[in-house]
Amino acid sequence: MKKIIFLVLLSFSTLAGQKEALEAIQKTAMALKKELQSAMKVSPVNAIEVCNTKAMPITKKYHSKGIEVGRVSLKNRNPNNTVKDWMKETIDAYESGSNKKGYSVVRISNNQSGIIKPIKTMPLCLNCHGSNIKPEVSARINKLYPADKATGYKTGDTRGYFWATFKTK
Ligand code: HEC
Image (cartoon, rainbow, N blue to C red; front, side, top):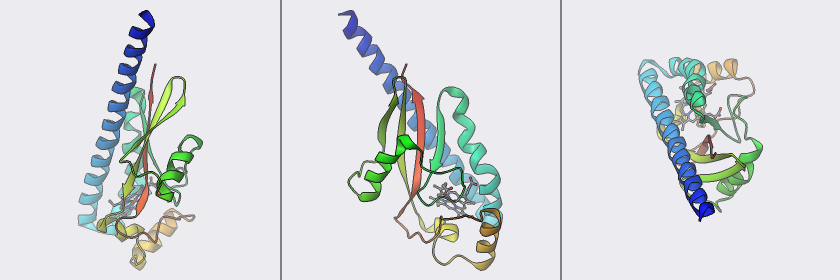
């Protein structure tokens, strides 16, 4: 009986952590979109500066609450956004099309789990991640990210993934 209660409590806290982590991803996505949209009103080149200086601080906002959020891509722009070991299998399944879920939950260790959520390419994204990027935009991207791989995308492609980790104990 004690064991059952313990397990029920444990799965409740896991679910609560999972919910919070998903919310953290959603809030981060909204905050990034808002910054991007207002920066694009000035110009795409201006928006690159905003992505360059604000994207990381915005995604790192949750790091203090036991939840970490970030973005990764197999074709990453920021060199820090490479796929980590615990994400690899899940991301491979998304890339091959065998996983079509809106998000996936991954157990990382005894006391930590993670969420992976695909990010779709929208028309707005093509300004900086598409195939016909304006020369002045391209020049700025190449200057800030000499090893950039994040171009050549079409609307509907998976541009990358949000991830969040949360404690399960
Ligand atoms: C104004 C140019 C611009 C636009 C428009 C833009 N991005 Fe980006 N994107 C960037 C820059 C610059 C970075 C690198 C940010 C950093 O240094 O953290 C980036 C990084 C990313 C990353 C993190 C992975 C990586 O490659 O480093 C994802 C995912 C992403 N963008 C998705 C999108 C999506 C989805 C859209 C459309 C809603 C979009 N971007 C629109 C410039 C842009």
